[in-house]
Image (spheres, rainbow, N blue to C red):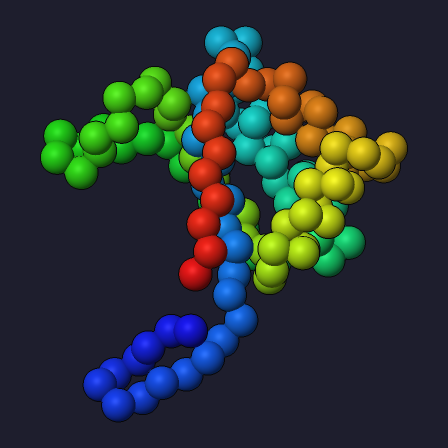
Length: 121
């Protein structure tokens, strides 16, 4: 439940978000990675396994606001309508033989290191 204003309450469906923080292998260009991510997003959206996405972004090392000590420098967010949709997407990407699972494998091959963080609002 979200609270808006001092006397207004409203209920909306909780979204689940996934922040992917990655470091690319030295041989992978940012453009190549962004295109692979775009292909994965398109495939998952077509199958209704993804609600919204954000752009692929590069780290901005702000001296106060960026306190993460890792060397991860590329980020993107995927949002799902529910935990069930997230689980369906994970199962699909890791267990099927179609385009999105192949694209997911290509994405993994481009990563040197990574960290994933999920949250629900």
